[in-house]
Length: 438
Image (cartoon, rainbow, N blue to C red; front, side):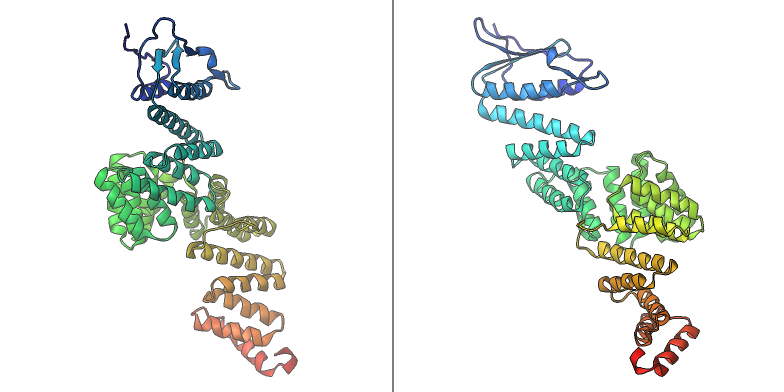
């Protein structure tokens, strides 16, 4: 007589959850006399290098057995800790759903372990199994984000948009999509997504805090303070809220409170590079060059593929008179062949990087290379008055007086004038120099 199978586990909660998911779509019963069974035993477990048991082998075997069950085979699951279960003659739809659940479980596990390529492969498979699964698209979006490349951001955005079109209640898809909008310089769209998410799930710290940051970027730091305080009330350990709260205080010219919040955020074991960069820049303004240098090093270690950490570290090395290290870091900010988003933010960073290179080249006496770097700045940002000012002085030192005068006048027009004495020398030299040097 068929009996319902119970699954017991005190030691393996993750695997039990997998089987419980399967039971929701499977016919569970004992085998009848004389029928052939296929079993999964405890010896399907694998051990890693440390001797710890892994479920990877068992889960892979379950997937194969589910597919067999969809073809009418009787499938038996057994493990001493998990109990005994049988899936009998699953229909194709139930089997497909079960395999999808397993793929999502494996993909999420890879994400938690920071196994980026494995997560991407598994979750692409999950989406292929069911293109109309909102959770599958959400997890695939997270997998693309985890790649840490700018090329993957567009893919991630598409997956989050697709996830929300299938299931508008997926708040983490809204959260990550809002983060992408902020990175792309669109805080208004980020605000819209976060407000929609909070209607579904009020008082989620991540949503509250990011909404505060979106409002800060929209010129409302008072509201940002309020939202981040609410986030910290919901979760006092949420270090990102301390970071955004610090930025809001700085916008309100409450510097002491801002620094305190940023320092609190930087103490977290999971601190993000933006925290180190923001706090490092404050230390630099206060003259603590060594403190800034250490923070910038942490930013580069946390996110070696992001340009801003390398830029700021290169700047700190230049101020420490360490030209070789400065140029190495600046080269890493935008390495040859790398691709970055075509946004005003990254264009500005690239211009800043060329400007820093120009300053380093000038300090080591390579004036021609400095001029080349400053001209690159103007290709990216023609209205950068500081680059015109540096070019005016560099061309003057090289005896190219007409070019020096042109850039000096441009610098004055852009409210970054040269010292009056130097400007007078440039004007006089341009007017009196022989035609061949004009």
